Image (cartoon, rainbow, N blue to C red; front, side, top):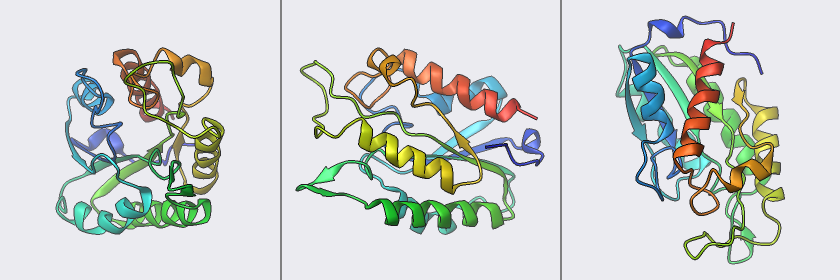
Amino acid sequence: MTRQPQQWRMAEQYLVLGDSVPTGGGTATTPWPGRVATQTGATVSSHGQMGSTVPELAAAAPDVVDEHDGDELVVLVHAGHNDAQRSRGDPRVTLDRFRAAAASLDETLADHPAVAVHGFVGLVPLLDIDDADAVPFSDDQPDRSLAYDDVLADTVTDHVTIARPVEAWRSRTADGVHPTDEGHAFVAERVRAWLDSD
């Protein structure tokens, strides 16, 4: 979708709401938010951790963004990888709950006076790769993660697509979900292209 027509270039602070993917879990490389911040001369802070879901981030967002009141923020949300996984055979977060949380988070960020512009970075497709350190996934991946990413794209105002082509991610992840240096460089490139779009 088209980037919101706001003056994001004035912002000096980036806030990333996410899980272990944007925080660089699984690798020792510089994660994509740090690369984008370096390229734009901004500073970056993060909220979220391994296992964070979109409903959890949506619940925390008002207080997290309030901590930056008075700043002019670029807020980037990169989560959903945990939502799209199964726990004891059931979805960790159902598609309906995921959709509702994404819509709520999108609205919260759009309405907050400290947020100059915000967007959602799409899911890394969850892949069952042949590696001893790979994250184990159910047989319905990557289709399941792609379905969540499609719902995200249809729900929020701005969505940065990164998942397709799926096969490209076999060399971009260290364990089937956490990006390698190549993967983080790719996400940073896509986010920069979105930020620079008219």
